[in-house]
Amino acid sequence: MKLEPSHALTWKRGRRRPASALFLLLLGTLLSGQGVYIHAKALLAQILLERAFAQTIMTGRDTKPWSWADTFPVARITVPRLNASAIALAGSSGQALAFGPGHVERSAEPGERGLAVFSAHRDTHFRFLKDIAIGDEILLTRRDGRTFRYRADRATIVRFDATGLDPLSEETALVLSTCWPFDAVTQGPLRYVLHATLQHEKTPVM
Image 1 (cartoon, helix red, strand yellow):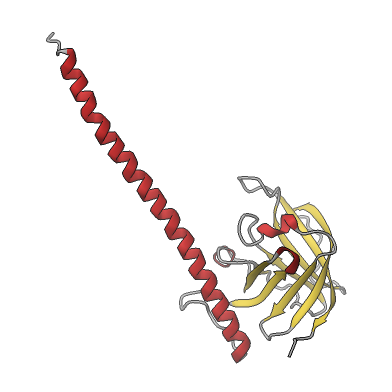
Image 2: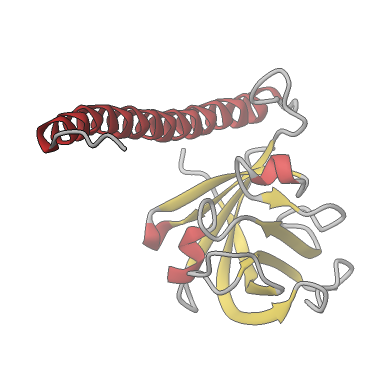
């Protein structure tokens, strides 16, 4: 068997290093580019949602944020103390929840008798729920422009199939729900459910 000189082996290894470095550089650039693209896409979506919600309030007609959307903005949820705000969408499908909180089907309209239930992902649009304190003010602006003030009263941890929420409840309340624990990396059966009671309609400042 013919053995290559040690300097030849060293030379071949040296050729591999630049190739490996170039591959890692290209991979890093690709991943970084994808991250920037996803972030930019999310920012653009929020701008379009804000614009569609403003258009809905102004015209009184439901406005899709983009032509192929299968949902539309129905409310803005704001927590003043946390400087947190999110545009909520009609329905709680996976596509709706990808862009904002969803107004759960067959739950009450905000400000009306019954439970108005909104759901969102814990690591995006409802990330602020982990910082809400009992007594915090929550403002909810409907698509007709009316704003209602709620007070956070209590929070519970329940299984997704045992929330005990009754859409036909006689109380006028708001429920914000997301997955729990907040720092989990996989989805589990538990849900964090924040209950808030209607205080009054907030009169616009003229």
